[in-house]
Amino acid sequence: MHELSVAQGIVSAALSHIKGRGKVREVHVAIGELTHINAEQLAFAFEIASRGTPLEGAMLETRVIEARLRCISCGREGKSFTCEECGSAMEVLAGEELLLERLKLVEGDGDAQGSGD
Ligand SMILES: [Zn+2]
Image (cartoon, rainbow, N blue to C red; front, side, top):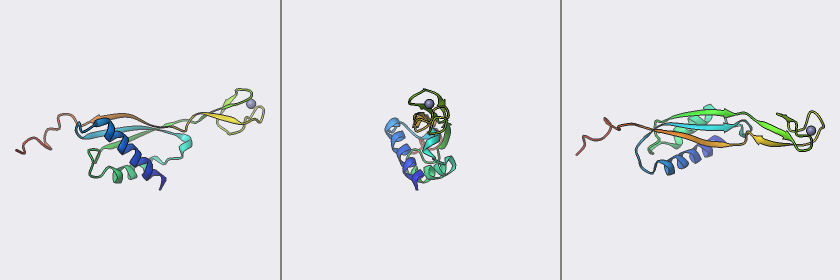
């Protein structure tokens, strides 16, 4: 399952960002349209991949980056892989990315820990 390896990538990227600074409440990612990642499946896979980490229980928020392609000979932009104007190949400007945009940590961390020892 493609989404599971993507989710594992998100988890490890997030972990290296927070460096043990507490639990994560929200993870915001941007997914290019051309990656064909299914947001619901990714959320499910994220739940599995984040178990036992500071990301467990965090909300995964995804936004889709629209595909943008440009003709290599006439420069016309569109969404297909061949130019509607001249029939040449199109290069991808956007839509293939997978970005970890923002992490929100749990503030205070109050009730969960703190009264232990
Ligand atoms: Zn063209």
